[in-house]
Image (cartoon, rainbow, N blue to C red; front, side):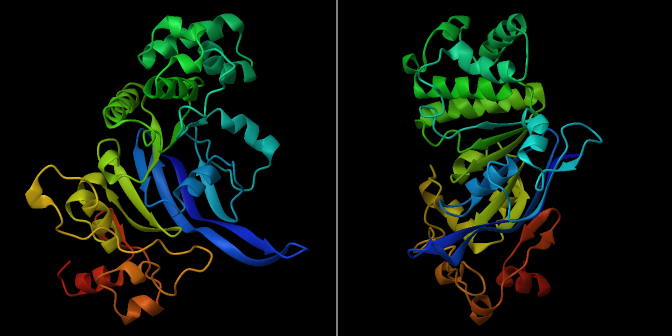
Length: 332
């Protein structure tokens, strides 16, 4: 049973110029993205900055209206509904079931509110009684490893890791069915990153959370995800179970991202070059495969024809002409 089914999701932004602000082009930030998230599953959405992964997460939260596609959300068995066409009023009852953990633990908390009020705010908005709110705040602080006394302090009194724990507590206040974590550890020190990742893993086991984990660091998502979807210039180019993707990446872009992950063993370093050049411009992407200007395996077909996602192994999909040809020859 899936908690989320995204089908052919696209998001475009108009480019306007001139005195009359006429539309002169469009930025295709997300193009025909499809994926599912099962109950209790974590899907990691990875790629370089500017690839469209944050735009996908904002469309799922309906912070941005999608241009095309469907976003079917099921917060309970038999409750599936397409959120893409819904109005703000129609979305309001669903918002409590989808919550977000933000990237910046410093900017995401109101500095003028005490921690207890920050965590209780979603409960207050949804009409939970005062006594129940206070009990729930104490429960959530304990859940994320903070003392009960933290509720009477202000965010400036906490470290970055502790602030992110507060943000996680706030996201869990209403028992959501889906949590969208937008690079939740990228602003933290490496040692603190590990603590937050372990906390998320523990919470997933205890609460059965479903999660969309947005990140650019494949070294981080390896430990928290069940499946990984790799994005490049608005499109998913590879998706697979985590173990399969790390052991046998089938797209050159995924290989390059994995090569950029720091490795402790010197013998494993520099086997594949990190991505060359700059990410393509989504307002003016190259024809064919958008990765071909940076791909060491590119051929003429890559420059002219857009590759489609194909299942090249059980539950392992890749959008690459080279992989498809190797598969036909029985080499892949």
